[in-house]
Amino acid sequence: MNQLHQPVTTKPLVRHTTIDIDGVDVFYREAGPSNAPAVLLLHGFGASSHMFRDLIPALADRYRVVAPDLPGFGMTRTDASFTFTFEHLADVIDAFTTAVGLDRYAIYVFDYGAPVGWRLAVRHPERITAIVSQNGNAYEEGLSPGWAPMRAAWAEPSAANREALRRFNSFEMTQWQYTEGVKDVARVAPDGYALAFAATERIGVEAQMDLLVDYGQNIAQYAQLHAYFRQYQPPLLAIWGENDPFFLPVGAHCFQRDLPQAQVRFLETGHFALETHGPEITDAMRSFLAKHLG
Image (cartoon, rainbow, N blue to C red; front, side, top):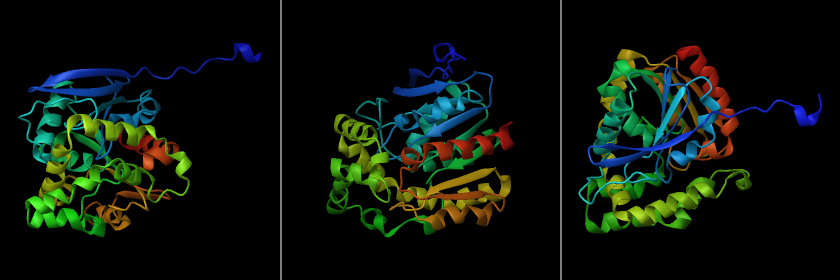
């Protein structure tokens, strides 16, 4: 065939939209057929739905894929009265799923997206069709010594302990979270950490510090989450950057304690595994979702 006349492969169209959810302007990306099985992508700290820029079209030929920016991140906008706790983030995303018509959906949870997704699952177990956890912790054993400054703030939320968390929002620390544990840092596009830092500067560091202080409440809810796992046995794929400085590989193995059929896979990379191993994660997800969602 003449090279000029070879067929062109068209990527699914990704739409970028904002919706009002109880006074919060939630920005989200969406692609795929509206009547297809749904997949909700939940990003984490130092990120936004931008981290799913390649994953969304890679799944959207077969699934309806929806990726919101959590309050305090990306292009989602809140007013000055918004309270930044994980419970409140989950309230917003819970209402968001209803507003956009996600009655049943699989979840991909990463970092902060995990405690948000876990709350959705515990609240509405009948809605969750499958779970992909990419460095989305659910067990205390998975927390590395890097959480020591946060633990100090949880135990004693003094002004000094809170102030010690400010450094986690510097540009250097944001970049470090993307590159630490990565064998070839040239595979990490700078867009992600540059956009994340710009959003923190625009929205304000105090919101991020509120969430770091509140993170201890997620650990307090682990027992409830584990009970959900044991009772409902949702299909789960844990795919983990094994060099993550915050969430240890043992945290991925722990899923099999409550979900014996859980799949666990490790990648030779750091926290932001999707940035360096996007094709591997995409292939693993497509295989996993095809088995459980059709």
